[in-house]
Amino acid sequence: MTLAHRTQVLTGLILAALLLVGASQPALAGSVRTLTLSSGGSLAANDDGYSTAQPMGFTINFFGVNYSNAYISNNGLINFDAGTSAWIPMGLQTYAHPTIAAFWADVDTRAPGSGLTTWGQAMVNGHKAFVVNWPHVGQYNQNGTYLNTFQIVLIDRSDTGAGNFDIELNYDLIGWDHGGAGVGYTNGLTPPTYYELPGSNTPSAFITGGSRDLVANSNVGTPGRYIFEARNGNVSANPTPSVPLPPTLVLVGTGLLGYGALRLRRRRRA
Image 1 (spheres, rainbow, N blue to C red):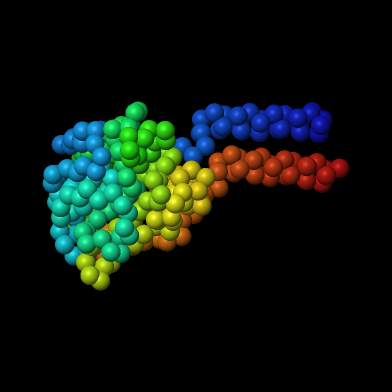
Image 2: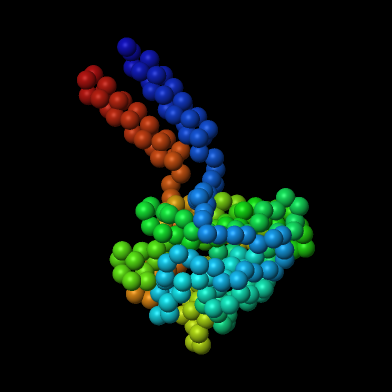
């Protein structure tokens, strides 16, 4: 087989692999988990509603206080002391409730085509989990032109210590923010211990194509996923999201290296 023929074969294999990757991995696929939920429920289509206390199935130590229930807000957050109808992301540093916010904004599930806020207990990698879903939800006032899909997953990590858990915030689609959204957590005290993801409360920062696109970025190298570890009552935050190298670029790089090695071998033989 001539060198030209080998090059043609190698190029064809690379192109075929790229086509397969492109077909199987859509751009910005996101990281929302599809899980079987039990002991859960949902909020009826509403604007600014919230649930009663819902059992998580395990106990967490959140900044030195133990909680076994959560209150789910339609507006993209969960509280541990009481329900809330707050729709303006006022800034977690001033919010006087222990809270985890996946996308604190003015969600309106009365919007045409909007899904409903749901929650329940599940298993994730062999660990108990409490899951809250906001699937394809619209914004106020019954605006379904653009829809968002995001999720909170609290994962029991009592295997590492009593009350330890992981906070997982997952995103598949962010098409609106209603003038800005809040993402992060707070213990709700004065002074507070809190964290807000950079881009919070900044119009358009988190939507697709924005400066802090939630689906494209990550703090753990998985696009659309942000994980914060709660250990011994404290929560660690990584304030610098990162974007991993897309699989297509990795494959192209591998193919080019292989092609370079083949050319080098041919030159040495010559």
